[in-house]
Length: 423
Image (tube, rainbow, N blue to C red; front, side, top):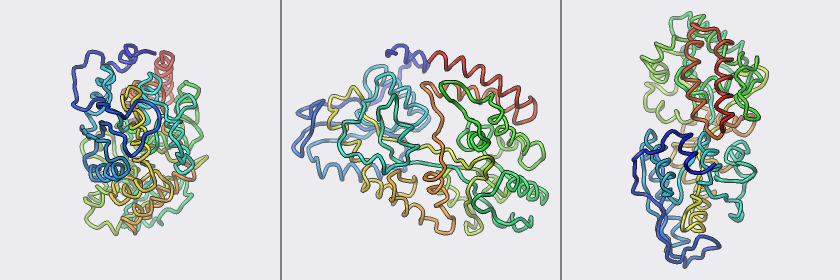
């Protein structure tokens, strides 16, 4: 697939967004081959989270200790603008030399030859990253990104509401039946039993997990898994909770978001990702009354893992230097700096302890143990955004009980398959 068809798929052809970050100048950096401490080059680096700027700057400073003559210019955009700007840069062959990549977009960029394969980077310790995350950034057998950080999903629980409902705190291995029983008993006290972003196109935070736990799947062999009976069971999990009053309606969770309901002490269980730790710590009146437990299981235990990677533009004029920067930003030392930042779980195995200890009473190793023991990669295809948008159009009415879930799931599968056939 060439550049024009890539843009046709993304629907952004003709967009007129520009960004100052573009491929840097070359002096003697070269596009191929090894670099040395004397290499002179200029690189551009693009990312979206300003909270992580101290980490980015610290790791670039460490890179420059080894390569003092390679200048790295950074550029940042808000997440809502990041992908549109990146795609416009791709249209003009002006991608930054190095940038952050996520799971839903990796295949789109890799399969359209926008990213450089990085298998030739020497001594990358691939076994030191969660396998599910390495697989996520492997396309057609080639590595295109080295993992930066990751997130998994767990249940944040309000210990006070569990105690008031006479329900014991969940333990590792608890089941859907135990989860639903706890949610119903908490709801009987006047609070909500459980909240999550099930109606807000956040499959990772909610229904992707239950589809996998029920033995279903989202996509396999480039075909939709939504019509699979086990996947439908995983979707019905949420519709049933809303129907029996254990979970608020989608309208309630639209008017007041799930994290706000949970932080206000109005919900006993909150399904969410590891990225919520810091914001909850800021919003909860008494964090000591909360903790984290694994997701409940059905046929299997599962939590969806996703994370970012560093990638290099295939069009970089300083490709060797760009690949060196990708490697430098993902070393063990860089990950330890990431952990001290506290905003993301570093992907390099063995460096997560500082993040876990940032809230010692919350058992944050639930997230890291899940990544290591039973995580499932975030489902993706070449144009993930297209069929994820279908989920937002079709599933909310089924979660709300306005449409039968099996009917909605089969409709979604048919339309998703039609999109996948065009990839």
